[in-house]
Image 1 (tube, helix red, strand yellow):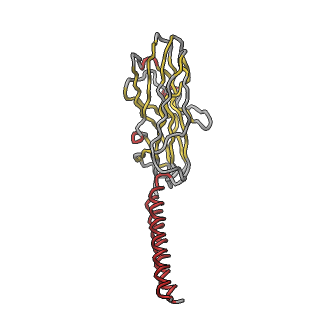
Image 2: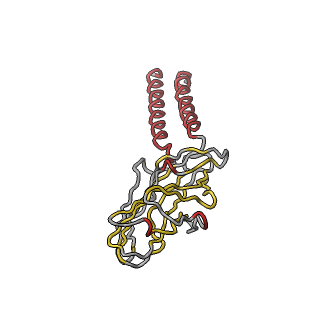
Image 3: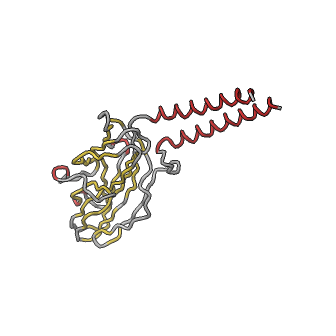
Length: 237
C-alpha cells in the first residue's frame, strides 16, 4: 500500500500543476471575433432598406473579465459597376434584441469604397464567459443598378476592445462566425447570393480560445496517470 501511495502522488500533483498553469494562462481580457459575410446584389431602381451585409460573433467565452467593444472598423467594396454612394445608414444591430448600437452622429452620411468605421453610441459590454452576435446592416438607395455588388469585411484584429475592469485596450483574435444557413438577400427586385464564411477551428466546447490547450493538457494528464498505475502494478506484485 505504501508503494501505491508513493507512486500515485506525483501523478495527482502533476494534474493539479497542469490545470493550475492553464488557469493562470487564461486569466485576463480576451475576445474572439468571427464574421459571416454576405455578398449583396443590387438590380433595379427601387430602394431596399435594412439589408444585412455581415454578421459578427463577439465571443468573450475565454475571458476572465468583461469586455467593452466601442468601434467596428470595416472594409466596404463595391463591384460590377456599383458605387458605395448607393449605401446609407450603415449600423450595427444586436441580434439578441434588435437594438441599434449606433445612432445620430455615429451613423455616417458617406460610405467609402474601402476603409470605414462604425463607432457605437455606448460601448457594447460582453460579459466574461458569454458571446454577443451582431449584424452590420445598411440601406440601399434607389439607382439605375444592373447586377451591382456590395460586400463588407471586418478584420478581427481591428475591432476596438478593452477590459471593462482595467480599461486596458487589447487586440482581439480570430474566432468562429455566426453559424447560419445560407440567407437569400432580396435587393431591389432581385435575389442576392449569400456566401457564409466561418473561420475553422475546434468544435465549440464553451472553452473559447483555450479549447486546444485544454485538450492537450487532458491528454498529457492521462499519460501521467496511466504511467503511475503501470508503475504501481509492477512493484505491487
